[in-house]
Image 1 (cartoon, rainbow, N blue to C red):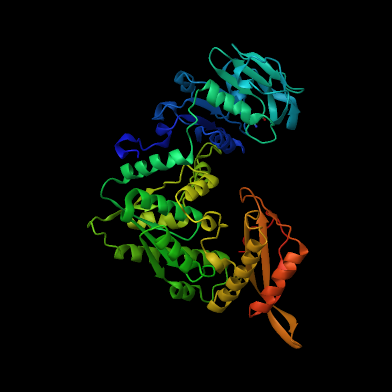
Image 2: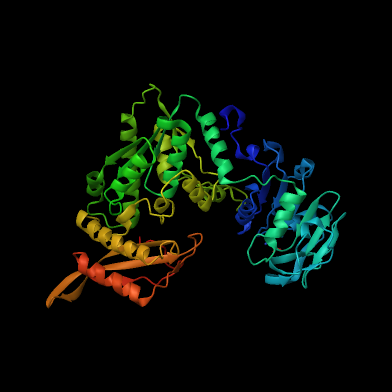
Amino acid sequence: MVSPSDVPVEVSKVFDTILVLDFGSQYSHLITRRLREFNVYAEMLPCTQKISELNWKPKGVILSGGPYSVYAEDAPHVDHDVFKLDVPILGICYGMQELAWINGKGVARGDKREYGPATLNVEDQSCSLFKGVDNSQVWMSHGDKLHALPTGFKIVATSENSPYCAIAHEKENIFGIQFHPEVTHSAQGKILLKNFAVDICQANTNWSMENFIDTEIARIQKLVGPTAEVIGAVSGGVDSTVGAKIMKEAIGDRFHAIYVDNGVMRKNETETVYKTLTEGLGINLTVVDASDLFLGRLKGVTDPEKKRKIIGNTFIHVFEDEAAKIKPASGQEIEYLLQGTLYPDVIESISFKGPSQTIKTHHNVGGLLENMKLKLIEPLRELFKDEVRHLGELLGVPHDLVWRHPFPGPGLAIRVLGEVTKEQVKIAREADAIFIEEIKKAGLYKQISQAFAALLPVKSVGVMGDQRTYEQVIALRAIETTDFMTADWFIFEAAFLKKVASRIVNEVDGVARVTYDITSKPPATVEWE
Ligand code: GLN
């Protein structure tokens, strides 16, 4: 076991860390992602980061790409103290142009923009960055280019359109590349990043979930101290469950989980969450049945935004009331609120997208922090989603829960279009359960990123047992995506859809017709409301 007193509270002080300075490229977070894939810990900060304000020392620095032109008046520039760190530096695209700009200013608009694949010619096989890298395909995305070799640098690779495709200042350990090694279209990009991080920066390859667990538990213990109490909401989703489990491991029953049944949860959700979290994971859990309150407040409301607001605000009230009832045995007040923030949320809030930073606070948590004067604890804030899943598996969270599709905070309320009533929720819930059951039976659940049934507020004519029926319509939706920013609809076999439709119409009272949604995102969103 790692003892709390030995552990700094910053992960970047525990693991050798590569610092990625983000100039706003759409690929910046992938650099961090790739490095972690070969067990080197990396963190991203905005390009405007003052080096003197970093309270840890990186093993190396990567300057990312970015949409700006280094020679433009308002272009962002790196703090020159980065060179005083005396660690290796790698500039990617804008990052390389920035290095060139600092060392001779030989950057200008190219006569040809270059977007897409190009073939690399490694000119200098002895360059440590290119060890094991052949003349393979690389991915380009730039309009500016280097017109001169910066002072002290040599050419190590070229491409047809980029005579300075890769440059190196071997003595100073500074490298620049025009292409993007972080995207999978650059065939050997990962080898290059590994050469940089492991060989050149000599970063330890000890970032693994197994190693993370021990230090993370010790970090939480140190942060929370020996007596403070922590509260947190659990929803039955992966992030809140894994967060709750690691809190339980760190501070036992001083962590209080609250699950609010808002009346718009999926089939058997409350029972399953209760069983899994208490019997299975030993978490100190309170279940609150507030379904009548929520459904009462939703009465007559049809506007999707209004529904979301009502659910968000009601949740805050119920959570606060329940929290006030918790009287820890220690007599201590509750001091912290657990929040399942993941690294992509952190990246979004620190990402460099202009002169100022954009900060996004989750609606519910923002409200709770203001009213309850709690401090925030975010044990997952360094992790990507798949890392959270891995952590969950290691902590013994059941497989089904770890791989569960995401479910929106307002629940089935935004999958029942129009007014939300108990009866309408029941129809959506039953149809959804059948759809998911069939998806699981067909072995498709993991391939699909999210699937659900929505209940439409229209009636349609049908015929059942020679009788005319006039009932509602269920719309099925299943999508595939990697990041939920864009998504495409999933292609089922006709026989599968046939079976699901037949089961829903036969087994769910109130449904006369089933349709399948074949719209991608954009222009549609994943949810209907
Ligand atoms: N904006 C710069 C260019 O067009 C850098 C592009 C990038 O970093 N992807 O060349």
